[in-house]
Image (cartoon, rainbow, N blue to C red; front, side, top):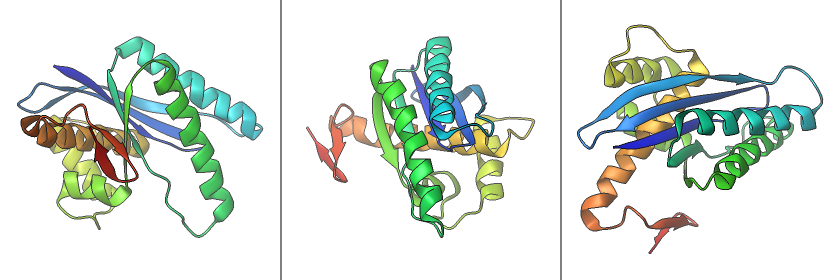
Length: 174
């Protein structure tokens, strides 16, 4: 059984989700949000780093999936998102976790069956797949979806002996 951390990075709210991959499916372990408030950017990044580090210490995942940055309408927002993502990645790297990155459409495809699913569709599928009775907060739901996507990708690689392969530039490196 493998504990997997999913991170939905944000400069104001970073969602996290932890699932246990049993080999037959995934079980819910924990989820929540790291809220950074409205301070200076460097303070918010420190909160993201410390929050992700605390989640890792509390639950002990061995691998992490994180959403890649996408360019939206506002370049400044994308840069801040990338910096929050970097803080989360450094926290995981410092803890020795394997790290995989997924696009939003890869996550949606793995969870809802279509890369064009909206947040509510993903949230409902996360609830169904993890047998949750209450809706998680939307950022936590996105993080759980990333963790589930990572579990699915890991399972598809295991029969081929590629579970320990590293991704670089979109390609698997043995």
